[in-house]
Length: 232
Length: 303
Image 1: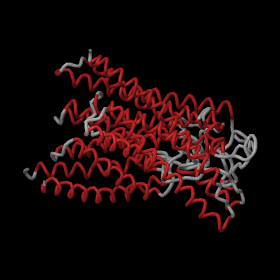
Image 2 (image 1 turned 90 degrees about the vertical axis):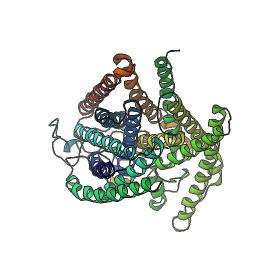
Image 3 (image 1 turned 30 degrees about the vertical axis):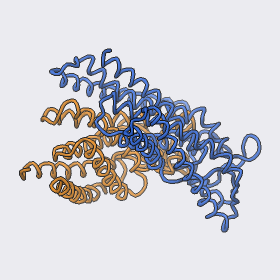
């Protein structure tokens, strides 16, 4: 293998890690409190939800890669397919979660981190149950989640493409991509520290720290992957 | 037979299996009290609420279901390599996963409850272990078998290039993420706190003050799954089924509209991506409609 065909995947893997880390910050997760309608967002952990969406994107990307190949047009289609698959997964999950919040628990979707929804301009605070930090998935969180899912699917697909370019077969590349996604999602989760509502949450400003951490971790991951390929 | 027709049939079957798997997964987590609402069951004895819930947060649901389905997939894969009938291999794989599930469930219950016995007086109810372990493993078996069969269909008919155990792992993680995001909210925010008025989130001050009485007698995990089967379980199933179906359907529709011969594969792929974006737009509009409905119907909090 020549040096260019090793450096390009290394750069792609590093960029993919940074994108995945950034994506997790967009996903509105309320953690355990959201499962009791005590905080806004989807009622599960950041890593778990981002991984669920990212892996759906990875499957979409892998299926697309198997049919279109790794030409420049093919790569663009794989990235887009990964993003769209992730968006469908998270979109359906947020919508169904919303139905349970509204019809099963009887709460109004309301964000706690903004007075007015920046997209719909609806006031939020009067609809928040006293003693809680919001509940449900208001429009701003939903849109933020879709952006996060798109980035997550794109990042997972980019990592998969880079690993395939290194000459790994689909199964090994898939396994490494799953591990790689978890590394970056967990780093983002540490950076968030519990719950986040989306891009309007003050915690979102911490994103650059997480992206830097993921860039370093992904670079190390990329180097190890290249060493693995070279040693086979 | 036409390959598109076979793919469409496999996809429809996958969607149906996903619906059953999602529903069974959520009800299993309600019987066994896993995932985020389990924090309240864990907290209850410390707040003076001695309960008869099963308590088994083995790990987050995505990780534990990833483990079970990957075990089933790996065992099935190994048996298939020995030349056995695939369906039999999948059943045996799901059976081994059920044993793993049962072992984790019992050790998690005993570990968690015994940890609270000395300081908070929470007894270990052996009848709860014996009566709940059947429904836990049974629901888990249904969920795992459906997913490992979906993974087999994805691998053999729907063109997924990943090996069976990896697809199984990914499906397990995805169903866990969905189950803990959707159905568990019904269990955590409504069923555990039914004594508080309907129509509000649970304030932090009330955390741990869960209902310990059922419609009749003392409440246990099976009462919760009976309640959650009416909304949370069903919607979780629909959620997973929709994801699997819509994501596969856009690809098949792209092949039909764009033509599935060699030259038009790019056109078909572009069409599938556009259809995916239309689906996402429809979901966004639906979410907004539900939000507006709730705002108009329930209104702001007045006190």
